[in-house]
Amino acid sequence: MMLPLLPLPPFPLAVESMLEDPSIEAHLRQFCLVLSVSLGVATLSRVFSVLRNIPYTLLLLLVGLGLALVDVRLINLSPQLILFIFLPPLLFEAAWNLNWKSLKQYAVPVVLYAIFGVVICVGSLVWGLQAFAGASLATALLVGASLSATDPVSVVALFRELGVDKKLTTIMEGESLFNDGVAVVAFNLLLGLALGLEQLDAAVTVARFLVFVGVGVSIGGLIGFGLSFLTQRFDIPLVEQSLTLVSAYGTYLVAEELGGSGVIAVVTTGLILGNFGSRIGMNPRTRLVVSEFWEFVSFFINSIVFLLIGDQVEFAGLMANLDKIFIAIVIMLTARAISVYGLGALSNAVTGPNMDLPLAGQTVLWWGGLRGSVSVALALSVPAVLGDRQEVIGIVFGVMLFTLLVQGLTTKPLLEALNLLGDQPLRVEYQQMSAHRVALTRVLKRLDEADDNQEFDSEFVAYQRALVEGQLKDVQEKLAKLERQHPEIQHYAFEQLREELLAIESDTYAEFIRAGQLKQDLAPLLEELPDRGAETA
Image (cartoon, rainbow, N blue to C red; front, side, top):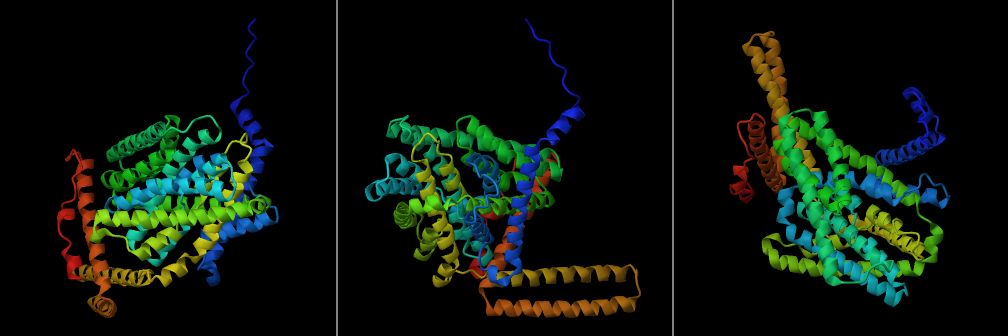
């Protein structure tokens, strides 16, 4: 007997019933509370000078720990929330801003650290935790896989703020991006072993790893290049901005659904759109709009996730596993040193003296290999059927807190001790004066046009010209003095001019492609010319 279908309520009534759901209002209040606290802390870190030396992400972590200490839980931080909501846009933003030319230049150390560094870290922790901490094989496997993912968000932000060498920044950021993907794949492979569902087979493990990575790269490349050519057909900044957001989440979900690595897929898409698609499919204004949008998204999500990580800490679990946490920290730092210095020496031997990474830079890479949101997400995703789940979470959280609070807060003094602090304040001063010079030159050009067209009284125009010329002369003298006192600034000026010329050439080709006068993107000819300016500097 077929039951009669009940009529659906009218659409307004359905919406009203959803809005009356008390859980929606409760979740909205929780979200607003988290957002208010995180943005308030991020703002205070810039208002008070005493807090400016602390990266705002670490300050948020401290506030979250304070809330956890008094047992105030803002929201339940689940692995799904990190891996499916927070991680894709953070990966996309980092890949979007990572220069492909620089990444390709330092590909050898990045690949060595991202792949073999994970193997060394996992192997060392699995052996060390069993030998010295008496941990079970399941605990050792899952802790090793979770802690193999580096997440130096605060360190990279500090590098950019202080103007640390671009080589060091690129290697650390490139390693972190691909390392996260390799660590997630390793965790998925080792989870079956920890649960006793699979047997260790090196050939099968390598084959599955290659499939994970291959599917991820294929999906990421397909979506990245597809969107790159699609955006050539129109010029609507808001639509192109929305497409990048959809691609970040869509690429991750599609790759995971098809059995690939969502992390690798998102990184691939971000690299393609940031280095290729934004050049051939977006005009400079749209590219700037999209870049500023992703800068906001990264700040917004980092402000939330670091606060919630601190807020999730269970101090009872930390105290119960304090001995194992200490052993894990020692093993992890030792394994990191072996991978960074050992693989660094191998990289230097392969790349030659012009591309080598000095010992001081390797030391910063070793100490700056922090653990963060990905490690937490992997630890929280351990199934409840595993009896050692709480032990895994406690060890991972303890090591993560050590890396963020101890290593993160001492990175700047380490840079100072190794004399690796960049000349960012000098570059900012040079950029500001250069902007003044360009602006005043354009003002003089406008005054000349007004005088030629007799738009205003000639005496008034002459008076204004004299004022502007005086200001321009003062700026030019300051620039000349800066270049005399700091000859290295000339090399920076040549680099900026070269990048500007390359951008003009690439944008011109993109205009021809959008107009249908050119069918394929051309490699910039200026890249093939020798950098004589750098030699002169």
